Image (cartoon, rainbow, N blue to C red; front, side, top):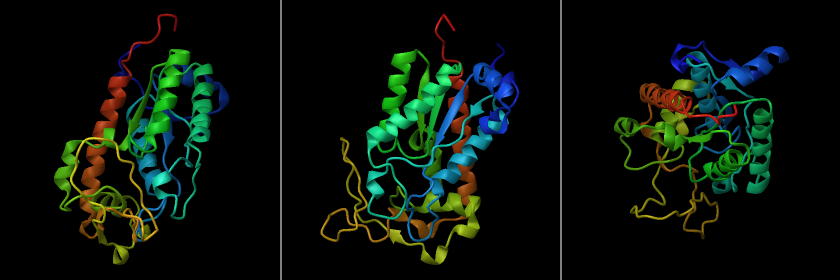
Length: 263
């Protein structure tokens, strides 16, 4: 098989007739299962489709550049940190993981060589159940499987674009990205600075929460963490360029992962 860079562009599974789909799922070096929240709060100024729009952007770039197959996206998932705000959630992580696993297994049975779970959430949030799925698929079927989360795809250079003191959700960079991707749905008159909950970093996993209970130390009036007022479309365009470069490099490298000898 020629190197992935030398092969033709990819395809969306849903755009294909079944005979072509049957062939491409077996031939593609990678099948991507994209996951991004279709409706999750991102502050008073951003649309709740923010994660899904970034997911669409990244899968479009993958299909344009590499011979991957992208399957229909998963838009509902496990979002405990945002549960007290409007949105749609599969609140049971086991149900969510079981659903994603069944999707992945269906592709393995059809001959997928490698599976990538694109996660536009972060590793220690939505990435937790997805990582369990990836490990189980690898162990049960022998299929190379990977989770690529937001913090895997975001290179250190993105930090150099920011002016905010700290951030992490609905902040300067996320707002900038959507000023570039979907400016008509961003209301900068409602953009705010909210550093509530910022503290000194130290080792350990401390699950975050955007609480709507004023008695909770994690109370958030806005649902953001950072300074959205500093956002610009130019920063968003530059960030997406960096994210795309990292994402495509991850896919190229993973496409070289050895397969079982009986494949």
